[in-house]
Length: 405
Image (cartoon, rainbow, N blue to C red; front, top):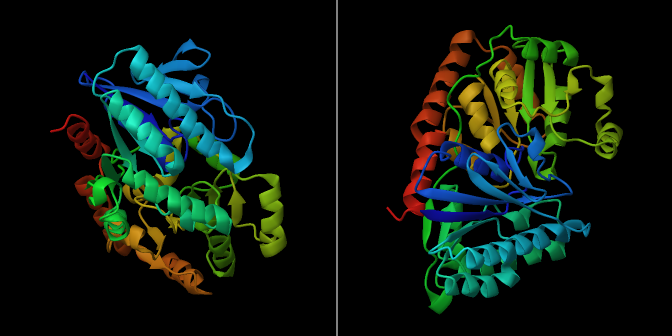
């Protein structure tokens, strides 16, 4: 049996890309007798894991549980601000090394998600190799470009990325663009000046429709409670971070003449809402509706399926799960025009820029599109997902990598 230790996701099944990925990987492989997963989760703080809300989770003790036959271990973290992410990953790595040694696990794979702990990686890379294991890395998108970070922190992320790529045995890139970037920046900079070894495996998406019917009480009650109607709203789903361009999307939607609502599913807080209101005065526009979070995956899928259109403003990163889910379920998709999004959707979506008035014009145009035009885009988008991004295809690719096939 191949033991795979996964570090870097906060939990299993939340909105974040890594959280979605780990949930799906373990779900699809839960009956795979050749691979045993061990997954780090945050015990407390932002985005922490609450296994009592995860269907099928079985508690082992206060810091361990099983989900999808994966051994999940919770790492308590101190309240130290942005540095908590670094602490969390290092503590999880330390736990993995102890667990591997204590249980005499042979040839383990430690798969690190994101490039947060570069300065510590040389030490742990050597330690894992002494234990007979290998280190794999998923570099995510360009963390050092994210708007939420100050200049010194961005510099740290860039240096950390370089060290993470150097001290790993395989870089698994979720985007062709990311794989090209890794080679452009780091060829000749590995141990012994070798080029990094890379492979491309995207994130996946469900191509199956929701098990809920259109008249399911869970869905109709949700619509009624939010003041929405079937196919009467544009939708956006994701974490509220600056590089996802919520402010631009709301401002432009307010400029549009759309007769539809704009439903925003995100983890907002009062401070953010107050800042947004002071800038945009969105409360004066009844179409703008912050509708909270939705953790029921079948309900969320149903909400996507019944949206008139989906807006996607993610600007930084690789293959984004929320984009894949939208292409697989929502008929009309309006995407920010960046390389990552075009790589995924190709010509099966509409693209907008951050130029003033651009998105508003596209929304107005979408309001006037015929059913035939929308259906054509929908069919092609779903075919794209089935051909290249189905979860079954993606987890099969990971099985080959983990088993060395």
